[in-house]
Image (cartoon, rainbow, N blue to C red; front, side):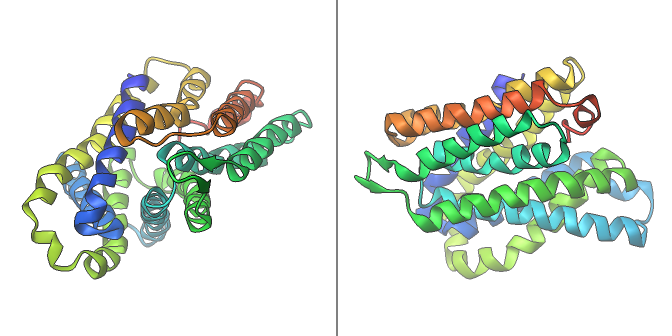
Length: 282
């Protein structure tokens, strides 16, 4: 289930890149988030649980805001750098958060491995372009990493105020509303393109509904530590799918960098203190 989830998310990302020329990056993010919000609201029906308190609403706004920023920045990075590199850089968000929550001196090893991985990623060129990575693409990926870390923090806080299903549905609605003005500005009349509405629902399902459902089922069958270790391989799945579906070749330094980031993520999970493991699934 976890393997299928990672393949689904990255396959959805590769399809999303094909929508960029049609409706723009922000337009693609808007359509994907909007359709995902409609799908989640239809399934979860969050209105059945009564009104939302003021405290819960404030947590939801932060949760949905970080989710929207993560989606938008991630798509902006994919427009400029290869999928595998973008996912690896974005993965530094939850990795950095996990390391910040730990007080073990041995975690310096994982910080060092992740740092070497970043250096190799940024120093390498892409065979497809014959030049170094686009600086703006790298910045967007790192901003997505920060947003991912905030998404975890605010997601936990929102989950304490509301049920998981209600928080995820309402958070996705807020995310879609935040991306909406950017999408309309960049998408414009291209939103009427029939080709967009052929691929957009597939992207929304593959990037959100299907993988999140698979991950939830996997969480009920696996220990949190095992779940986290398996999810750490997502940058590798992204690089492989980017290679086969988008023709995004990487130099050996960048493959090595992705491997180091994966090792750092696995190490931080395996050697984490028990108190940190309880917050990993969020």
